[in-house]
Amino acid sequence: MKTFKNLFQRESLTHNIYTADQVRLVEPRAAELAGISLYQLMENAGAAVYELIIKQYSHVKKLIVLAGHGNNGGDAYVVARLALEAGLMCDVCELGNPQKLSADARLARSKWLSQKGGTRTAHNLDFNQYDLCVDGMLGTGIKGAVKAPYAEVISRLNDSVITVVSIDIPSGMNADTGYASGVAVQADDTCTFVGIKSGLKTGEGKQYCGHLHFFDLGIGREFQRIAVQVGKIIDFQMLPPLPKRRINAHKGAMGKLLCIGGNESYAGAIRLTAEGALRTGAGLVKVFCHPGSRSTINGTRPEIMVETRTEQLADTLSWANAIAIGPGLGKDLWSVTLLEATLQHCLQFHKHLVIDADALNLIAEHYRLAIPKNLAIITPHSAEASRLLKSTPNAIESDRYQAAATLTQHFEAVAVLKGAGTLIASQENTWVCNNGNPGMATGGMGDVLTGILGALLAQGMSNRLSALYGVCLHSCAADLAAQENGQIGLLASDLFPYIRRLINTEKRD
Image 1 (tube, rainbow, N blue to C red):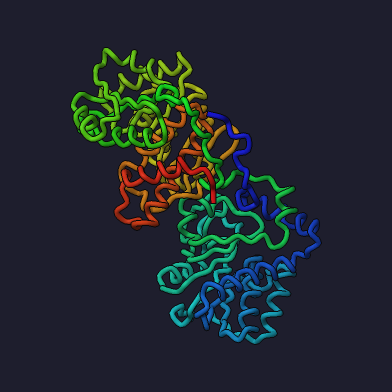
Image 2 (cartoon, helix red, strand yellow):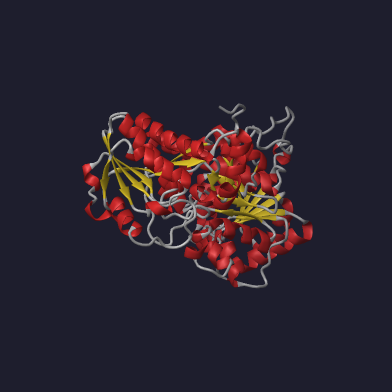
C-alpha cells in the first residue's frame, strides 16, 4: 500500500491545536502583523459571540452576561453592549473586580455602561428569568479548582435549564487538558478564538464545551505562521482514499492477518476483530483461539479461518503479515503463553502488531512481557493506560495528552488512547480524532478497531498511518451508523457495512 505523500492535504488553522500560553503569547504579535489592535480583537470576539447567538438562538429576548475581570470579561461586555444596541434585554453580573480589568477591557466596559444596561449581583441571580447566558467569567489561565464566588455561580448555572454560550473556553475548565479539578461550566456552545485550545478537543473538555465554534478574529494567517502547535485535529474527510486494487490482485497479496484471543467464553471479542479486519480489506484473516470458541467463530462467519492447536502456534504466527492480539484473550496461563510467544516472534521477525485489551493488562502485570520497540500499535482506554503507567484512570483523564505522549515514549510504540476525542501519539506528533460519538460507549467497539488497525498493517500501511486512518475510519463509521438509527443501542457490529462503504469511497466531500 502506497505511503500518502500529503496526509493533511486539506489542513488549515482549524486542524491545529495549541496550548493556552502559546495563544496568549503569540496573539499580540499576530495582531500587530495583521494591523489589528488588541482592542479591535476584543470587539471582533464579542461580535462573533453575539452573531452566533442571534443566528442560532433567534428566539432569545433576554440575556444574562457573566463577566470576570480578564479579557473574557472584556469580550462579555462587548456582547452585552451589542445586545442592548439591538434592543434586547441584557443584564450583566460582574463577578470580577472591575479595577483589575486591562485597559482594553475597561474600554469595553465603559462602552457597555454608556448603554445603561441592567446589573445583577451573584447572590440575587436567577438564571430562570433569562433565555440565554453568556459565560465570560474565567479564561484560559485557570489551572486549579475554581474559587468563590465563581464556583457557586457555576454550580447554580449548571443546575439551571438555561442555554449557555461560553467565551473562548467554559469557565473552570483547564484549557490545555480539558479537565476541571472543581466545577466547570457545561456550555451548549463555546466560541473559541485565534487558536483552538487542546483541552477543547478531548476527554471532559469535549463535554464541557458543547458545540465548538472557531473564529480567528482576522489574524489567523499571521498566527498560524508564527505559533507552535502541540498537535493536530484529524478526521476521515481529511484523509485521501486508499489506492485502487490492481486488476490481477489476489487474496494472498491483500494481507494476511492473524487475530489472537477468544479464550473460553470470550469468542465474541475476537470474532468482531476478525470481521472488522475482513471489512477493512484484509485478504485472509485467521483467528487463533481457545478450542471452546471455535464453533462460535466458524459458525457465524465462514470466511474466518480458525486455528486452536498450540502446537501449530509457531507456524500460524509465521503465516501472518501482521498480528492483532488481545480481544477476549483472558489472563490465564493459556493467555500468557500465547502473548509471550507472539511478542518474541514479532521481535525476532520484525513483524508489526496491534496490542489491545487483556494483552495490555498482561503486559502491565508481567515485567518479562516486553513490547517490541517500533513495531506495535497499542490501543488502551484510560483504565488500561493507567495499569501500563502505574497510575489511575482519573490521573490519565486529567491530562490525556501527557498520558498518550508518555505511552508512546515509554513503550516506543504508536499509542491510541481511546475515549472522547481519541488521541493518536507517535514520536513525531499527537493527533486528536474529530470523529466519533457517545453511542460508541458499548462493548466490542475496541475489538472492531483492533481488527481495522490490523488489516491496514497487514496490507502494508505503516504503524502511524494505520493508527490515523484506522481510528478515523472506525469513528466515522460509528457516526454514520448513529446518524441513521441513533446513538443509543448502537452495536459494534453495526459498523461493518459503514466501514465497507467508507473504505471504498474514492472521493471526499
